[in-house]
Amino acid sequence: MQQELHDYGQSGPRYERLTRDEPGVAKPRDLPKDIRSLSYMAFKLTLPLVVLLSLYLLVTHFSLGSSSGSRDGKFSSGLETCTPLATGFNITIYKNESLAPSPLPASHAASDGEQIIQLFQTLSRSTVWKSVANISFKGDTFEPEGMVRLGDDRYVISCGEYTEHTKKYGKPINGTDRTAGQGFAHLMVYNGKGERIADASITGKGESEYHNGGLDFDGEFIWGTIGQYRPNSTAYIYRADPATLEPGQVLQYADHLGGIVHDYRDNVVTALNWGARDGVAWNLKRAKTGCDAKPNPKSTVRNPSHFVDYQDCKWLGHSKFYDDKSVMLCSGVATIDGYNLGGIALVDVTTMAPLAEVPIALESSLGVRLTQNPVDVSVEDGKLRFYWMPDQHNSTLYIYEAQHNSPL
Image (spheres, rainbow, N blue to C red):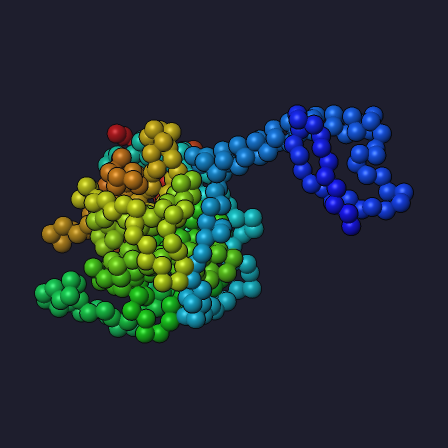
């Protein structure tokens, strides 16, 4: 090998190049002038095209990731999660069927979110609700907490099984008002006939955090919370693959968490504490996640509404109707002097301020307010349709539609 120094004049750079000093092998300086001219011209023509293509791909990627709900975002695909949750994972399959449809349906933000928001504006306390179907869900559902509807034929329900009930202290001790109790958190899958497809226990025996919260679906993962079954305690956020139900812990928090939504455009996850009094948000683009991750939230906002305590929520996207606000739909109850008030609301995720609220007086056949726990929503033939599942153990899915001709 022989090292040669080539001088291309004052207008060009000086650089060193290693060339093979072999007979019959042309060196760059030995090439005919016309070939070198053609090569240089091709390089000059190609370089701008490469630069333009690179800019196009960059802009396209950014615009897709920053959309306000035109398609599902995949920001969370590479998120670090904690796998030790798998030690408490035990699934029973009741029917030899897939747990989730393929392909997965779009999230509300990527499909009907804006329609839901606009149709919500037509609701009032005088709205006429038409019963569409009552579907009995087979087996013991324990206490249903959250719901994700994956099309007409798949429902994922988060449930709490309690083997030792909590007991009130009578006065606060160490910041909380009751014993820890014991139990298990479950994710269950049902088809549109109410037949149980699978039951996954996702916490282990003796774990202090066993209370399942609400659910949200971002088009890729199911998001949930598991916490101690008492206020001012501890909890963690998890996400699960709908095809397997196996959860991965995302982060831990030093308070109870219940309802949850994932804003996939900004990659912000927001969870609600006991009674939905606070909305706690983490920016997953910056927060540490995975095993033992306890990142500080980016914000903790007090809920200014005392209408109902939100039990389960669904992220609807950044709404054009509300000037690009991040909006979630929530359903819940509040007990006032022994009366259970039910209600639904559109909520600004960032400020927790209610954007629209409607009371719900509907009850199950067992006398439980329909908004007690799980909720999901869809638009069918231009009508707003709600899915509620309030009863414990022997649960019925109640499906209602708001009628267009209702008085305001």
